Amino acid sequence: MAWRCVINESNIALLRALHDEHAAPLLRYVLRLTGDDQLAQDVVQQTLLRAWKQPGILQQGSEASRAWLYRAAREVVLTKRGTRSQSVPEESALDSWLVADALTHLTPDHRTVIVRAYYMGQSVAELAEALDVPPGTVRSRLHYGLRALQLALQERGVTGSD
Image 1 (tube, one colour):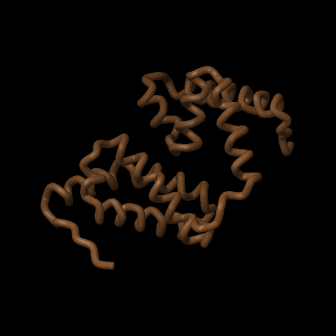
Image 2 (spheres, helix red, strand yellow):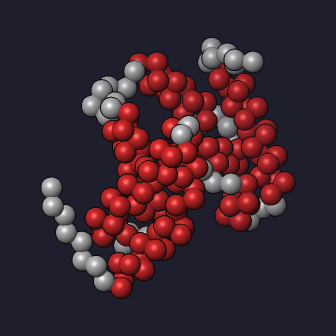
Image 3 (cartoon, helix red, strand yellow):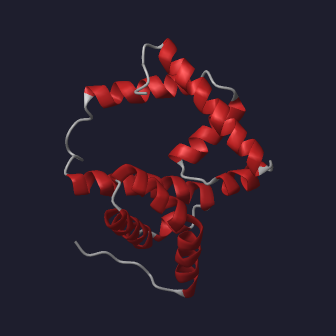
């Protein structure tokens, strides 16, 4: 399938900025999905190539671009695993629902740091800067938020593996 992308200074600058801003957190996210460093690097490259092939993505702004990149990376991982066309196993769907439901019962501060750290791959330093709080506060919110999440899951009949 042929693709067409206008190569101009503007698109090159946007792609460079997209890479500089999102490549490292995207790699952390994909590493959590795959557990394989080489595969994760390959997925990130393919994801950024997809963004390059769709210049409109590059012009949507940082947050929209980030969301698109994470979805695209997940699609690449699923395709590489050969599971994209298969339905999501019922257990996995139930687990996702239980976690999402439990997250709604956390305080907004706890929910924010957990989602941004574990789903968006942001580091403590990135979270501290984005939320304008000290890194120690971020670590504390993560600690107590995870404890609250564990309790919320136990209330739903999910037990820990400890």
